[in-house]
Length: 79
Image 1 (cartoon, rainbow, N blue to C red):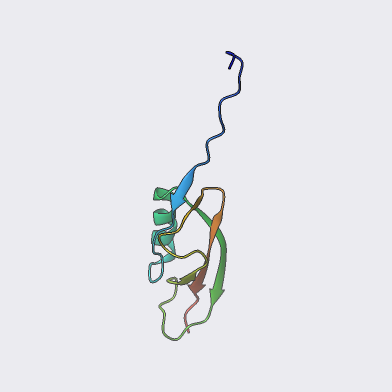
Image 2 (tube, rainbow, N blue to C red):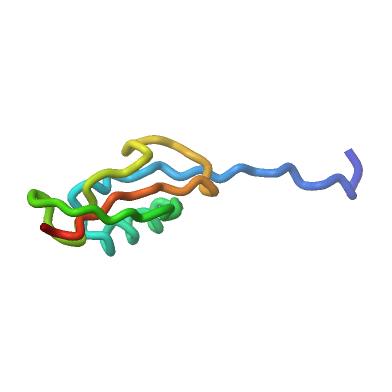
């Protein structure tokens, strides 16, 4: 391998944190600290989950994924 050989491409991974029940701002911070990215955020009405809290996440907690793959969230807009 010569001195001009390209450096091997390194895939970076993140481990998706548990976001359900967290306020959206805290969920976004947790994703950033884990080197993950926020994907689509969908808001739905909920009588049981407080406004601004995460109801569900598209990728389960503990999943290791490429940092380029985004985590979609469903957030409560309140009753």
